[in-house]
Length: 476
Ligand code: SF4
Image (cartoon, rainbow, N blue to C red; front, side, top):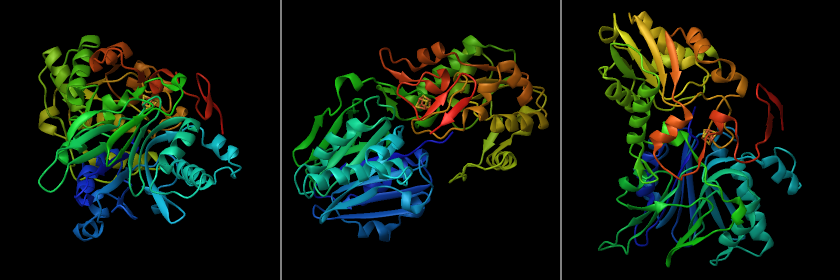
């Protein structure tokens, strides 16, 4: 699975903010490595700079120095809708009259075909769902008169947003405003931060997909945006509006932000992700104990859960796999063999640590099974006597339509096999998953609403394919 995009926006009068956007995007790099970009406004015009690749290869000191202005929006992308091309890199820019706006999107719309049809566009004419939203906004603004230094972008959003279904945390700027929007289900995270006043600046405001991006630019965490909330930031500070009908508000934060996607130092519902992953491991041990010599985690996101498993089980925690730290930009390998090779490039066993040992190997999820099967094979070839897989989430058996790149249902191992069939297929001595109840207990956010559609098949909004319990029937 791959994360799908991070957004970072900043409004800081008196400060050239491009270098802060660079730092914020760098903190969000795990959410997308295909392209990076920023749009910067000096109050009169917007300049957009974007490149394919990592933040550090997209921007250098010379480029950042040329981007002057106190208002900016940044984006890192992993494509789930639309091809991975420079044209689809974000922020997306649209001009209306002699001004314009820029948009960055984390998530995935589920009603693109309907929106295109409503607009009399040819099916598939938009290069991505984000491009379509920008087009709808531009058409709305053009219909209402030229975008001026008034609230035209905000007004257009009030019209367009209720028409959008699916997952979207948006950041937008025009020349005067920074705007943040979280969809009515709040599938993807988005938070607001405050830059304190200094001798040279009256302070400012920051929006970011995850809270560590606030820390890295010296902003303090204010709060997460509510599902269905739009925050408009300008000289008067932040102002909230709720452009969706009350009936649409149904909080469903993606549960996999806790399991895998978010950084361990990110806080959601006021709790640090690392501690939640540790509790997942403890809960997993309580649910599926096994006799073994050491517990090891698949780096990086399996490690906190492995520590929790070791603590709760009394089995010593150990290192058994080394990850190449210099694996940067990754691709979805097109063939099984290419995926196997990719795993070998990324992970290597510590032979002296695993030889002759019975291992508990903790990982966060099993998707196709290619990575997991390869890890089991490596550890056994390195001399492990037994490999017991313990997965810190329930079986991932349904595709995600909300901005996470997952294979179709027939490629998902858990859609075809139960745990014992999986153990045989993967060459493991046993496989066990954390229960859904155990996952909720570990997250420990009573009253919070979550999406767990990829685990249960129960989608909180209409999705663009018909799904039966055993196979995808049709796509549109
Ligand atoms: S379907 Fe799964 S991965 Fe997608 S948003 Fe829901 S919980 Fe997250």
